[in-house]
Image (cartoon, rainbow, N blue to C red):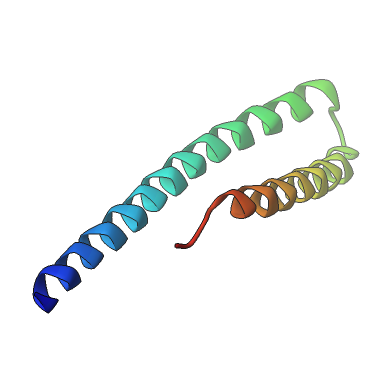
Length: 80
């Protein structure tokens, strides 16, 4: 029946989207933890006014790393 196919398709899509949501939430929590750790490390190692420029460098590096990871992980995901 058409209804059974739609319910099955909805269930599959819901499961995939919910899994993605949980992974994203876990990643956000991990990123926030690393944010605090990196901030404290910078403050400890580089006291003074130079801290802002190092935070900028680290933000750029982390952004490039994240974009690269997202690109390669999106290649693994298959939409069938």
